[in-house]
Image 1 (cartoon, rainbow over the protein chains, first blue to last red):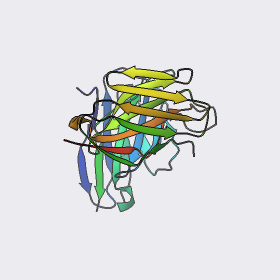
Image 2 (tube, each protein chain N blue to C red):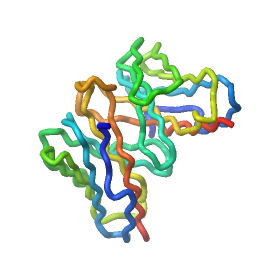
Image 3 (cartoon, one colour):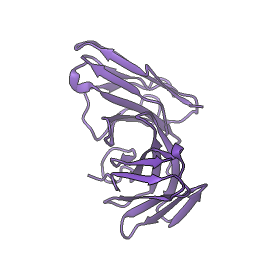
Image 4 (cartoon, rainbow over the protein chains, first blue to last red):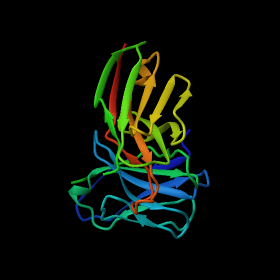
Length: 113
Length: 115
């Protein structure tokens, strides 16, 4: 059973709309991550957080923003969605320190029309 | 790019056979991890091998790591139809190089097990 939850699972939205993708974990992990993945392709890190009030940009430039007000919650927001934002967004968390694997959510598949 | 690259890109075998996937990377790492992804859903962590380890087993999985060649392999023995999925290697090199702190993933190997 998943300990990290992403909602919605699928989202189809019009251009220019503001959207927030939700991610919550119940494991008390300090580290959380957002990855973007196009079909059949590798994952690209777009945001990460070391803990409350910590957010950093990843290797892939993204127009999205994130916040970390609570340990368990790491939402991702797009202020104005565009068709180029169509992708799958995966949230993950891990314990602090080296040599820990990531726990991933089921992902949100976003389509901007 | 620091990302790992899996080889082959796709592999189709008969149920019961062994499946071997390879991963190469470019920089020193803290550890290397393998993940499975079913049908575009979230990834599931399979196994982690530290930079000072050479081989690790977990059930039907065997992972090797050769840091001198910057390569790893994942062996799935006695494959089952349920093993059909994409398999990704991910390298943890931390942010010692000044980059973002997070796993770097390859493009994956798509494994199909024929019943």
